Image (cartoon, rainbow, N blue to C red; front, side, top):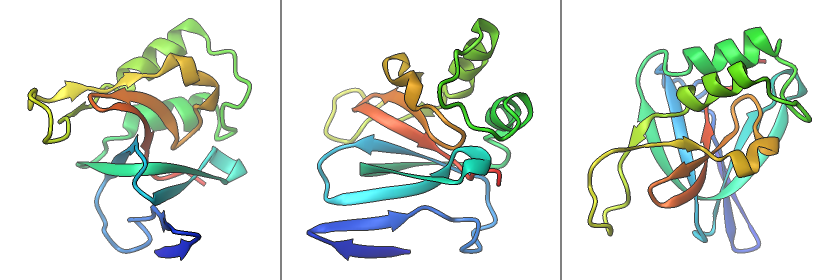
Length: 147
């Protein structure tokens, strides 16, 4: 679903409700595109987060298993706002976001590169919304919220 406001186009990410039936994750790479992607996140708080940029899809079944283990089981769907991340849980989060993605086609390095948890923006991390560093700069890793 998308709508336009003030020269910006807003796109709500919800492939499951649209009938896609696949496991899905996206990286929203921050860029001045005029397209704002929104995702429901934060577990039971059902927060609506948004990021301007472009999407890199990450498709496959059960991609979010470890992320769900962290945010749904360990954090009990309560989100992570203000969380002082225990070292072992932070290590798991680092490993869970390390999906390999390709850089944009205007770069010389066309090899897949793993995402890296952007620890400078760790306070922004929440279920279905984790800041990462991509080959093209800062981004957000998103998936279906558990609520």
